[in-house]
Length: 191
Image (cartoon, rainbow, N blue to C red; front, side, top):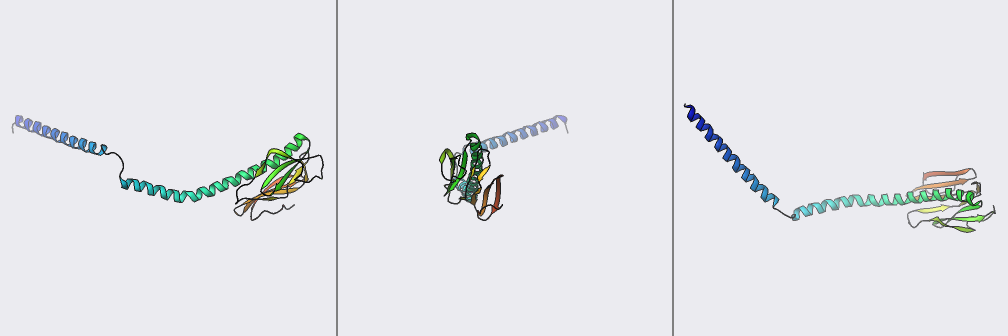
């Protein structure tokens, strides 16, 4: 064959390939315009998203409520520990006896003066220092205690919070405060 004819065939085949490529790109471009010109969502897409959200909420909501209850219980325990430690410090600061009174669903601190035999829930209430439990699933019990200006317990006792078949109890003795965590109901501290 003639080289001129071969070059012509190559040239024609290249032109044909270019035309084919251009047509393919135009079709692709037109197809992309159609896809990108769609706006909004279909009903099916909306139902799928709604069903996923409902399933997630059904699984997560009960766990969230358990977590919230446990968080509130832990918060009350921390506040109870703080009040007992604060009552010791306050007695040292004021050079007076301070008591931790457990009454119903609240813990209140009282300044009971210098009398070592004063009742635990008597005297002047320490303002803005107390704990009141408003949740019905948490129970508070205890005998309370009192501390002298040296931080030593005058009257020994305990303060206990219970939730979900478990408890946190602060045992107040003449030598210090001991924290006990266990299962079951609150009871007085063993020696």
